[in-house]
Image (cartoon, rainbow, N blue to C red; front, side, top):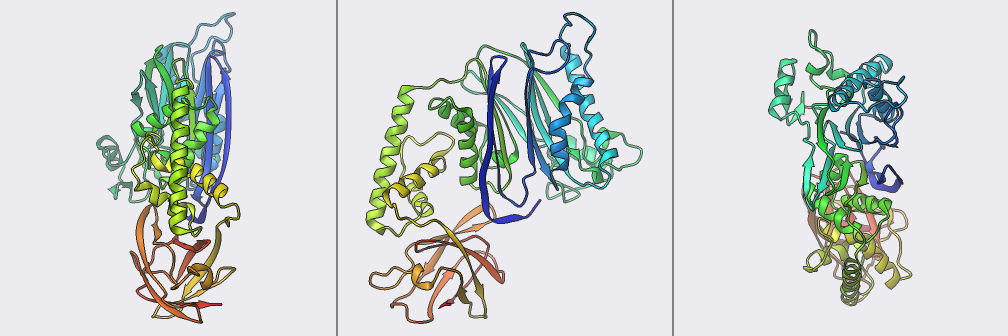
Length: 471
């Protein structure tokens, strides 16, 4: 759900903190979405009797707006705490029991959902929730929707939450009993999650309680005893999990923690890598390191420096072949086929895109930044006019026969499809004819991004022939 921008907003909001023998980092990015709908919570030392040694972390993936997600990020924890069986009058109150915490989490979710339903009468937004309450002895994983949390213990993924999707038998059965259907793996063919806070247009089935509606606000709570082998916890929205598996995320973060103890930087790298792997959603991640988290390794640092050196050598070879008529996307395509050893596990060459961009900038100091322009299909023959600062001359190699320098890539939503571009055979003198081919029918407008002399199309389209006209 939701529309997309012409290019992603890559600015990140990040933070970090420490306490209760924990360290955490957070990062979020709007990405390709027209609005940032994610939110998060990080609280070390919970209010309430006997909870100073407890902590709470959560990620909220909003949809159809951000109102519910932002409200929950500020009010869900107080709602949960209000439902715990705490003895506030005792001088040294005992901690709540495991069962009391589980019931308090469930009741807190149902209570805040009803309060928001009464409060936000005209709002149609909703949010998934994934979180964890960390006590000195236990981990309480909380999940409502398709965001996900994992626990890494003893060099492996010990636990992960299960996504609440409408196609799961238990979810589908509840949806059918509430009078709904599951089409294309969505509730009534629309909503892709079967549990969430908010989404009140899906919570109006008569004679059914809150947990029996088309979309349920009931969280799934999993309790685990803490272990000396616990390494770290990852909470993230599906903008990350859509492009990185549990194992890939574990391996990537574990490898990055051997290079830096800056948890904000590690989270930023996960977000960047997800974007470079093709995520088109908002992206948010919370990383919490526990007692056996990986430490910085001199061997790992040496391997990374060696990898960066080999990447720089490959880029120099590419520049010798293509002169300086390259951009970072072309270089990434070539490097992806080089079978480089020692790439970040779980991240691959996508995790090195920022380093590739840095190397290119150092090797080509006068390198131009990407600029946007538009071209239009103005006739059945596919006549194209280039506008803005980019002209047909800028898109062609000035040496010898005129040609567009590289095959380009068409981005068809989250998929990347190779695009062939046959080009010009004479110096530019007025309109010239070439051809290109790609997938799907062409819309009346395309969006074109140019860097130096390379072209990248960022909407679906097909043109069998075209005429380039310098405007």
